[in-house]
Length: 518
View 1 (tube, rainbow, N blue to C red):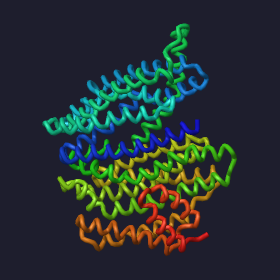
View 2 (tube, rainbow, N blue to C red; view 1 turned 180 degrees about the vertical axis):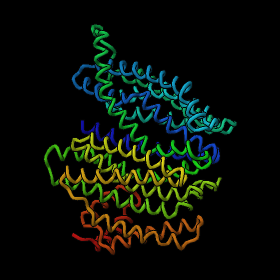
View 3 (cartoon, rainbow, N blue to C red; view 1 turned 120 degrees about the horizontal axis):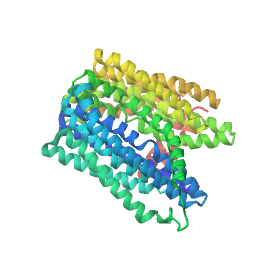
């Protein structure tokens, strides 16, 4: 079981990194091909794609994974397979209903009445075409997860993303603009759903064998199973919608108050601002089971080390990343969107957004720790309140400050979410966070940013700034004696896995060890 867990976690982690990069490729391609105005329309449709997929799936994929895994463990393979089929029935019905509502009711109202942007009508209607396919994919991914076949999830996601990028690019190039970009997603999910069905039928038989001849499952039993699945899935859906709200509420509000061109600038800045989350979310994913194990065995010393190390190493990378992106916002946008320098108008929003990502990184790591020690409702409640704060502050600030107001609203909400999560983390784990370490990292990061105010606003200035910044940050970390000998040993473990760079990194760590504290 342990080997399955480690293997599955590693596959999903690598997959998440690859697909996040793929997501950036899609966004940057669309931004370059569409231009700010059309890309702004795409930015307005993307949140609805996520929202309606959540509504259509109803939080059932995790429910499939949970109950199918339990029945499999109890050697009740007929019930495990029935779980998949029952959930699939619910999801297909939900997908068709939600898709119909989006195409014929919601999309016309959102585009023409709420946003007063008729150009958004066809892209929003195309979102409704995604849901029937996305729920099929989601159901079978839940089945794959229940038997630890994470590679099957990886295959379906790879097919989805490759088809989406290729199809969207082709459709935009032939003149379908934003509608073509969304149709690319439709085709991605359609092909992925076919692949998921094929994999399930071709390879899952040995994990979920065909129905036994004597297996009888009455309508009443199926309704009871459906009830269990739905009750489990409701809080999952609420949490997923709240998380969507944190990420997307301001973009949706901008559709009411701002032009599509301005929204395009914001949408271009947003994915760059989220880059530091790759570090924090990866750590958050790792700390949850580790904290759970230490808490369950009442090993306070181990729990303390896990908690402190998560924040230390998370902030060691996240804070300089956030400050670096903040001070070089214009240069980064100019480099990434070199085919259309108008996107530089989103620089101030990027600066503010990425500062908010520092706060959200602390929230995400704290959230996983609190969940790991058996308190999943606390992060959910804070997430819901954070979404409401984002909506209220965004409604007030966006009409006054435009896209900068949207960035401020997200950052304020992230900060206010971070504070109670820190409180609950320290109270429930009885562990004090490494505030001295984090303070020194902040100081080193601020000093690191000084060259940004001297160097020219060019690609060469950005390159020189990055090189100087890394050197200055490293020197300041040493001068402030930020690291302990244990920290150096932890980094040495990473260095030993870096292949050809391991020797050079170990020499650097040998030097750093001279400036450590006990």
